[in-house]
Amino acid sequence: MKEGKKKRKPAKIDIFGVWCKSCGICAAFCPTGALGINESGQPIVKDLEKCTGCGLCEIRCPDFAISVDHPVEDKAVTEESGEEGKKRSLDAGK
Ligand code: SF4
Ligand code: SF4
Picture 1 (spheres, helix red, strand yellow):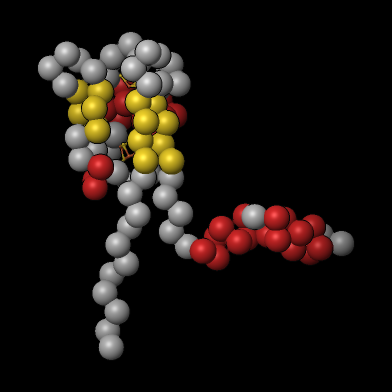
Picture 2 (cartoon, rainbow, N blue to C red; picture 1 turned 135 degrees about the horizontal axis):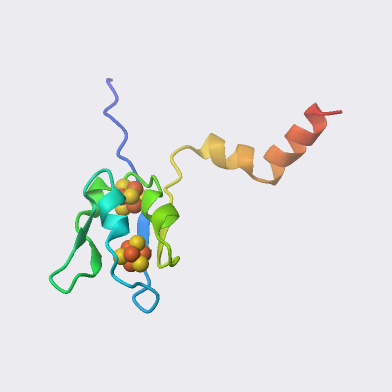
């Protein structure tokens, strides 16, 4: 049976309104158009499906007012970056 393309897990985007000064940088740097600006000039998640989890908005925000929880695609990556992964890396360095 032919396997279909794996659906990407959406990232989780949090915008902290108290810290946000509505500069619009996050939306301007978002390469996919997942973020937008509402009529009050505040950033909004316009289309979460478009978000690739690249983290550019989080990196560029001067006020740490937006955070992105990156989706974990591959279990192997999780294992490798966990405690077992660290141990394996240390063992390899002996
Ligand atoms: S993580 Fe990347 S794609 Fe997602 S909203 Fe931020 S800049 Fe846009
Ligand atoms: S870059 Fe930061 S401060 Fe500027 S609009 Fe986006 S979340 Fe708000």
